[in-house]
Structure formats: structure tokens, C-alpha cells
Length: 113
Length: 109
Image (cartoon, rainbow over all chains, first blue to last red; front, side, top):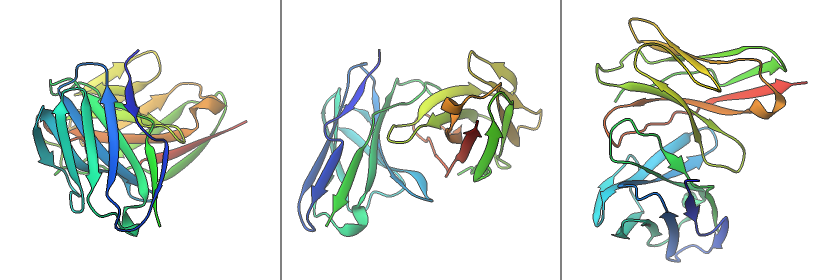
């Protein structure tokens, strides 16, 4: 079975902390994505990566950065967490061809206090 | 970017066929239409995808009219376990998977 694993199911952090969210996929997928999901807003794309060390901004990159040092791992970094970054974060991956489907992890519910 | 519009919520009863329609008036020639399902506390899961006419798989059918400005996801004989949020989205290029707010389907006994 294909698998996208997010390191934490729940996280509680304080304002100003540096936060790392980790995502690992075991399918040798070229493309990886980070979304956040908020009630009434659906899923919004933060960043994506189409290759190792390559990254592109999505629709809401402000306050976030990413790292992809290895093909299977894509990290989302909150340099200085703020309360408005409290959200569900979802990682996804897919093969490189255009119409391949996305595989999602189970999500990390982050609370910033 | 093309945008999709779908109903916020729907209710249905077990055993009924459910049709969820999505509007995408500004769909581009190369865009594909795809649907995902999301249960609480899980990430979305792919259901079905199409370009034109009709596509059917083991869980759903997707109807796309000739002008492609809308599409309809059809779930035959739903059960309680089909209660979920259903997202319609357009694939506009390799990386642009734009999710809207989805349709919250509630299946009643």
C-alpha cells in the first residue's frame, strides 16, 4: 500500500517557536505538497516540490518555508509560529506525470498558543 | 486560475443515488476534472477523474457534458460510510491542484 506519513498527529507550540512538520512518502514520488485546511476555507496550497532541493510557492507561502533534501522527505517549517497558523496541515505526494492522483497523509493538527 | 463551485452540503438516505454537481465555467482546454473524498481526521482520497463524457469505476461515475463547464459525481446507492466531504477540482498543470471548500454529504439511515 502507498503511504504518506506525517510525523505528528497533534502538536502544541507557543507563539514565536520554530516548528518543523515532517512528511515521508515511500512511493518514490517526484512531487510533494503541503496544504493547510481551515474550516470554511477548504485546502490551500502552501508550497510544493517537484524534485530534490526544488521548491515552488503555492497560494499562501507567507510565514512558511520548506526543505527537501531527500526525495522521500518534505519538511514544512514555521520560522516563528503565530496563532493564525493554528490549522490542520496535510502533506501529499504524486508521480511526476500531469494527471496522476495525489496521495495524502493523515494530517497534523497544529495549535499555536 | 479556473475555479470550481459546488453545493456546501447535501443530505441523502441510505440506498439512494447521490449526484453532486460542480460548476467550472472557466475550464481550460487542457484541464482535467477530478474528485476527492475526505473523512474526518483523514487526508483527501482520490475517487475519480475524467476529461470528457462519462467515466465509471468501482465506486462512482463522473458525467461531463460536451461544453465541460460542469461535471457531476454520481454515487450509486450510498451507505452511512459515504458520509464525507467531496471535493471537485481541476488539474491545471502538473502541480496546480486547487481544492475548494467541498460538499459535505450526510447520509441518513
